[in-house]
Image 1 (cartoon, helix red, strand yellow):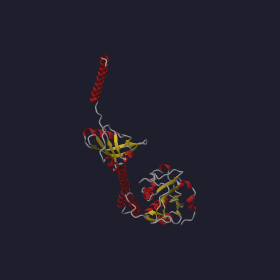
Image 2 (cartoon, helix red, strand yellow):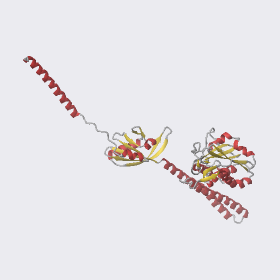
Image 3 (spheres, rainbow, N blue to C red):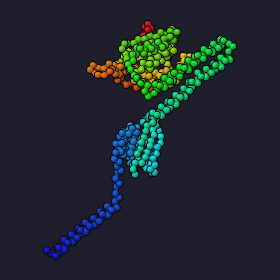
Image 4 (cartoon, helix red, strand yellow):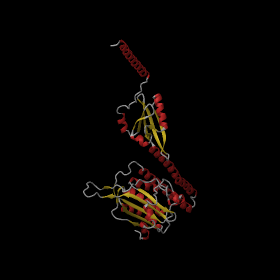
Amino acid sequence: MDPTLAAVLGGVIGAALALLSLGAMMLSERAQRKIPESPEPAVPSGVATVLSVLRSSAVVMGPEDQVLQASAPAHVLGIVRGERLVVEDLLTMVRAVRRDGEIRQQDLEIIRGRLGATQYVSARVAPLGSQLVLVLVEDRTRERRLEAIRRDFTVNVSHELKTPIGALILLADAVSEASDDPEAVQRFSGRMRIEASRLSRLVKEIIELSRLQGDDPLENPGPVDINGVIDTAVDRCRVDAEDRDIKIVVKTEPDLEVMGSADQLAIAIGNLVENAVNYSPDGTRVAVAAHPIGDLVEVTVSDQGVGIPSSDLERIFERFYRVDRARSRETGGTGLGLSIVKHIASIHGGDVRVWSVEGQGSTFTVRLPLRLEPAPGQTGSPSQAEPAVPLAPTPSGKQPASQDPSHRRRPGGHLAALEEEPR
């Protein structure tokens, strides 16, 4: 080979080797300077399984406040959206626990939705390993509401009991001072009997309402004949109605049965009939009707009484709420009767609604699921059918005019019984 060519080739090869060596050195130096990325912390084995069976809302948070794992209740409660924990107070607790490793527990109020509904929760945040944080949230909204209801109930009961008790004390003093006046003693003793009767009724209805609000008020439900319930309810008010020349007209259909408690349903219908009699002028009529509509039975009680102002319709089913307190004192009303009706209808899978116009009267409608015979070939005993439409009672019991059967039938339908002979 030519010495000159050999020299040139050697130079080229040497340059190439030098370049390769320089490139390798540069890559090695860059690799040494590069900081290795930390692997994403993995959720410990078995945690996901545990979270899936918890009733609490559970969330596993990563070191960058990202949600690594969340249970279904956490999404339902609305504290997790995508990979973010959307409640700022919970995020503050998470960061504090990550900082010092101390377990924290706190009661929080969460505002949800555009309507600003408030939910009350109890949150517990604890470290899970060196980088992860576990968040457990219990929804306490129902408990807080029940606590508020019980507190209001206690206050209302105390207030309502003070009135007849105070009246009895004053009347007893008056009787003592008028011991030499037989007419005054007779008059005061009569008032004492009225107040004592009112007090007895109030205590009885408080006990009844408290029992209905228990966990299982229907211990032994059975078939209930609606016609028998109506007869019992009407008989309870017949004497008072006859004293005031108020005719009670009953119009029903045979073979109407529901599942539940005959005694409780008689109390509910009896309260409606009693109210209709108490708030009706002398010489008028009260109509009680029952008829099936699909898989439901509707029991309606209509009167020609004073009616209810539209502003009060949404509150008449509240405990101790009375439209006319002065008239309630005259009739012995406690403000618990309609609340009891609502609870009895609810625990029987039904609801109660009202139509009323001042000066024209009122119609109360109780809807209950019918007890139907099993289909041919079906084994087992007859069971209560599922209602054809949802029966979740509304807080007020008031329905839109287009959906309220009693409204659509005014002034005809079952009110035609007002023109019939009383039963």
